[in-house]
Length: 239
Image (cartoon, rainbow, N blue to C red; front, side, top):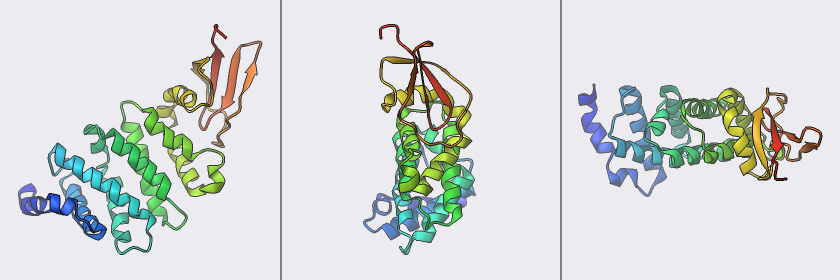
């Protein structure tokens, strides 16, 4: 099968096509490459460096999900659905395309809207959930767009984006839980005078991002609601 596709594979991966000035051409090329990837799965159709170029183009093309009236809109949706179904996004982890993964998450939260059919929302949810579940470590860069998406104000400003973030966090709550303490401190909810001690059981399923907190002097504990579990911080002895 691979040999039968070889001519087409080589013709599609040229710099001229991957860097073409016309977005319609890029989308058409990526659509063909995505279909080849579906056929060759679980093996990648190209070497690592070429696959990195393919994923760079993929993230660029996903930005066109916001252009619902464009000529290539349906092709972009097809690419998105195929990436979700064949799990080709997991190759991005194998190739250590960490920055691209973050860009992809940010693109999803930025472009998702009520104008999209449900399968777009579902494919985005599937891709992000798979990437998080299969990641060895969850970086702050990856957590930041997730936490930003479920801020309380975003529920009103961008409710579909908020819902997408809520769904992904719910799906991955067990995997994300160990990383939340550092993430919440880093984004400024708790100051550096607090050090994380434990994460309790989930208490608030509303996923509303509450930025204020309460100090319980008798226990020297600072507690507040985060988008996922209830988190407790103990005040440093230096305070």
